[in-house]
Image (tube, rainbow, N blue to C red; front, side, top):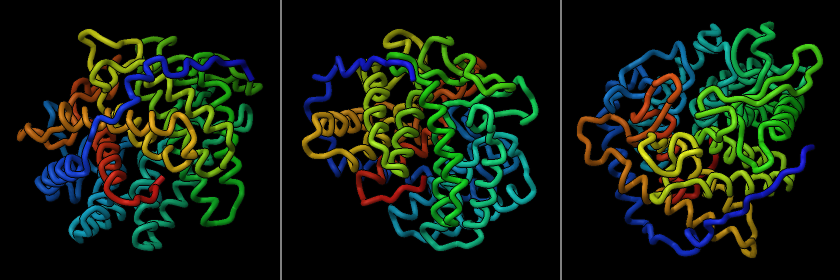
Length: 395
């Protein structure tokens, strides 16, 4: 494995003190988010919000393509957990049926995003209500995900037909999809799910992080030998830059693998990947769409910030009180979340049916730039719920 260098936190003083985000502040933010959800519940009962908004409004789509529908159902499960209101549960359970149909009929699943689709919709349903049909659908999704595992290289292929040599690559996002396999191993006691998740994770962390622990978006392998070929970007600023959402996926994804494997080197890796993210935040603590940028007129990506917050809150469970970074990470999480609440939430935008403004889907494609996106909304809700209750992972 290549030798890496940890940047550590050279802006450490930024997070030495608490920003005094209070429980009341978080409760008010959650109330505002729930108002938005309630206003749109009827529209998004039998349909789902589009992955990103147009002029800060989501349009309704069916559960027959894409990778984002699970985030909306996950938001409903979070709302149900936070309030106990059966309205959210009833809508979420209706939507679970569409996920059952989608995986049974293999509709729009020629990709690796089974965790994004099924962990937040069906694993959570089974976890919260014991829904056996949701469990079955999630296991079918896990089976589909392992079907994309490539023995040569030991990774799960991200996109495209599995016999396409030009598509022989992984992307960093899949660190968030493989918890579906860890979960499947736990409920079935079938080890092959765990082994494929584990090997994918090890292949990813060996190749996707550069010497400074910034992340490539995607990494190619030789289809004949499985040897690593090159890291490039698909959604970042350049092949050598750190796409902000990818870095945040890396933070949370590495940590989730630690939760399931308990291999301590992943905590060390988490810290180094996280330090790179924190070191490249602008003054208001919410990242630009690519970490190459720390000032100027480039778009922000509030969704990357929300993902990072959730990882920073999760790591608190796994660090000893004596760890010098425990307090730093908690303060950073609250500082970023406070900025999201005060400067990026839609609470004062009656036109918007989203929760967070100023997110980016894919800047190089001019897709969803400076809009709401549904995963940003989900992770914002997850962060708020995490700080108000003892929350168990859906992942």
